[in-house]
Amino acid sequence: MTTRPYVLLSAAMSVDGYLDDTTPERLLLSNPDDFDRVDEVRASCDAILIGATTMRRDNPRLLVNSEDRRAARVAAGKPAYPLKVTVTATGDLDASLKFWHHGGDKIVFTVDSALEKVRTTLDGLADVVSTGPELNWGLVLDELGRRGIGRLMVEGGGTIHTQLMAQDLADEVHLAVAPLLVGQANAPKFLGAAAYPGGSTSRMKLLEARSIGDVVLLRYAPKERS
Image 1 (cartoon, rainbow, N blue to C red):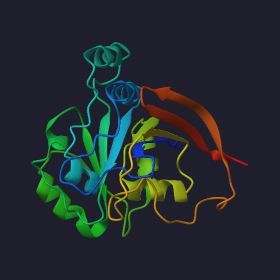
Image 2: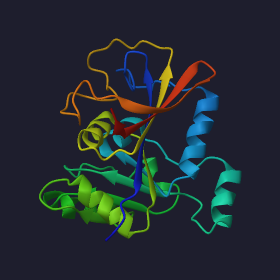
Image 3: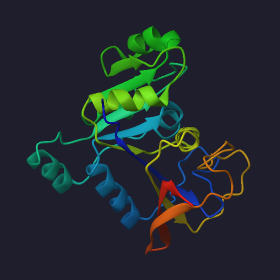
């Protein structure tokens, strides 16, 4: 039986729970020390996943930026960069975005109806896998496990975080809480409405709470509830 990867959700949010504001420019919620922490976590993972909406909005390269951390990965027999993963149900991807042209291998998970569209758009830039008529997170994790992914870092967006939390598929959550208030109803939030495991009275286990400059890092174990 294939072992699914350990799933770590990572997000920076404002005190009122937003991942970004509604301006065209990305809202920088973390500080330099916290960005470096995120880089360290990336380097510890076998794959990093973002959704197609986050890719279109932020156009990230999604790399391990530290040369020393990349060298340590290579010395340990790993690729310099973790596998980069995205998911799309619509197939609306842009082959010119930075995600496809930096780092190492990439894989896209999609659905049957968008499979050929994605393959045509990317034209060999990534491996493309369908999970069937609908996007199936269980099959995504099974396939990543078959490919040797032991630790998966998920960096958003909010829809993906919500789906994984609601389906009880997240093993750990890293939340960097920034001293900002966004207050814009249409801005993206870390989590949306869903039927979460255990309901509103179920308390997740707190693994760590510490300050990183003006940001507070909270680490939770969602599957360890009381």
